[in-house]
Length: 165
Image 1: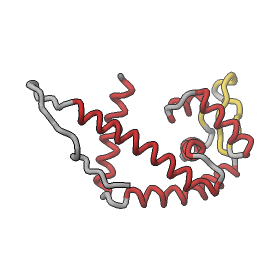
Image 2: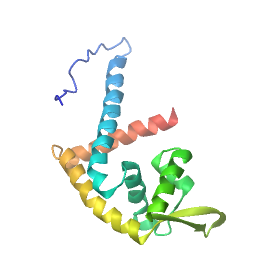
Image 3: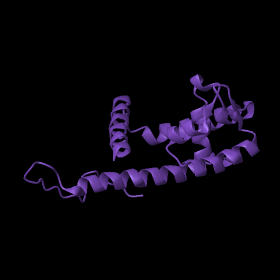
C-alpha cells in the first residue's frame, strides 16, 4: 500500500471567519474509516488461528478488565462497545456456544443478565491477547508513547463530538 502524506492532495482555503475548508474534515474522517476497515481485516487475520473474530476479541477484552469479575450487562456492553444490541446478541450467542462467555442473573436486578468470561474465555483471551499485543505494537512502532497518548486524546475528542451530534 502506498504511503499517504497527511497533507497530500488537500487544498486548504481558510474562509473569511478563519475556518478551513471541509476537505480536511472529510479527509480525516475518511482516513479514520480506512484505518478502521483495514485494522479489522488485519485483526481478522491475526485472530484466525484462534477461530475468533475482532468483534469476539473486543468482547473478551472488555470483559477481562479487573473491575468486571461479575461481568457486564448486555446493555453495558452495547454502550461500551457502541454496537447495536442485535449484532451483539448474535456474537454473544456464538461465544456462549464456544464456551467463552456465560450469561448469569444480575444480582442487582434479577430481571437482567450479566455476561461473564468463563475460565475458557479467560484462557483464550490471554492467548489471543499476546497476538493482538504484537499486532498493536507493530502497527504503532513508529509512534512515541507521547504521540500515542496525543492520538488517544484527539480520537476521544472526536468521539465525544460524534456522540453529541
